[in-house]
Length: 94
Image 1 (tube, rainbow, N blue to C red):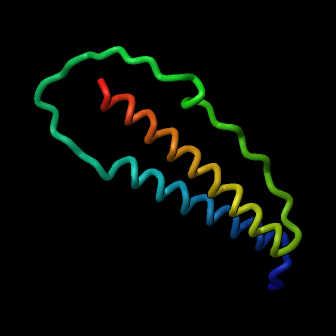
Image 2 (cartoon, rainbow, N blue to C red; image 1 turned 135 degrees about the horizontal axis):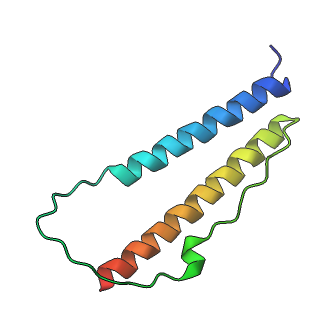
Image 3 (cartoon, rainbow, N blue to C red; image 1 turned 60 degrees about the vertical axis):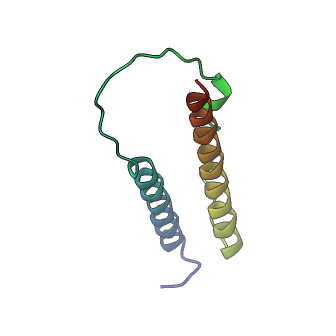
């Protein structure tokens, strides 16, 4: 199998995407708390923190294209992570 085989490259991108998703889901579920009392708090979250730009499907033909795809995916992950931390800050300030 050649490294430039598009099927192989697409599989590698899919595997990387799945790994990033697993890391993200693990980070979301890592904190567990026992709820002893419930309270409803209405809090407005800016729409800009709830929206993410959709990622375009990368066209992978070279190794450089793979790096660009990984970089784009990681950049989107970091934007999501930053938005989540801002939402948490809003929640903690109340």
